[in-house]
Length: 229
Image (cartoon, rainbow, N blue to C red; front, side, top):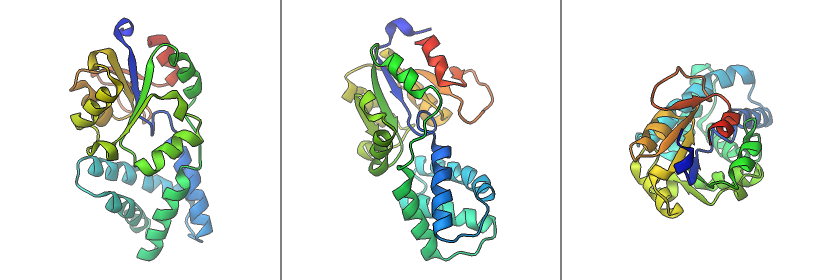
């Protein structure tokens, strides 16, 4: 497809390599139990997951701050399931969630196999909207850190994907060009369209079982990357 011209591959982290939902569920299982929050985990997560995605979009769009994101996603979840909880306990849960999230290390199937395949052929990098304080911990805990040459996050860039500045910073640090690069991520708006605006080649990892589109090739398994690159 574009194999011959590619020198650099940029990955998103959460929902692309690092299995955010599985690690998040394990974290909530721990902190809800330890804080004696009497809610069924499945019920809690069925409400929390879409609310979290909604607040991450607001955060990308500069409509909420980091602290608002962390508080409001929990507050709205508990309100929706009609569970009475104090603000102080919500803040405590928010802090414990961030503290323990990066201690889990589940990745998507074929992550290591695909990275081992790509590493000798290309320079590999990360572009993530995640918070700097925990993204490195995730990478190290999951034994992913050493695969990547440059790791760019939204806090060091001062902007979030799909803002072109974060992609430009990543290209500059990697000393490469968009036409020679592939961006692989799960979010159509942030990863795919954002990167395409600068001329990246793109692959959309369909982690959320979204409808098919014509913006670029969609893959349902990371293993498919071996057949493309």
